[in-house]
Length: 189
Image (cartoon, rainbow, N blue to C red; front, side, top):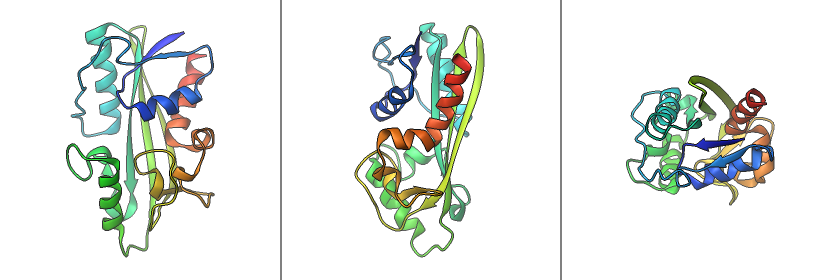
């Protein structure tokens, strides 16, 4: 089976490919000739996942799936949430977002947080939604060199290492995106 993954994020593609069985092949947006950036204009992660999947189905005619992820921090009333990728502003780096988070969390006692991923699948004229949640805490300092985004400052419950200190396989088994993908794969089987 071939299916389009509606993202331009190479890090996400790498993570998803590591999770998929060999009988499911991902086509990238580049593979289908989509070079435009799909704007995330919804106010929920589910809305953004749906928006991206619908854009590809409507404009390119492919069955596809799209995801969106938010980091929800208790001490920040659920922020940055849907704004996680743009937490420090537009056109920022992962490091800019991490540094803003570390600054916002300085001196906070409650460091509980969760990553939440929503995946919208458009398949044969119907849409399905899958969700994955990984609870953890925001660390006081960066730890690790792997992964991307907030990985160096997020430590999942039950672990003494950040996502950035885990292998791709280990992270994929417990992460928000990995859990949502497992639901999607189970559905596709």
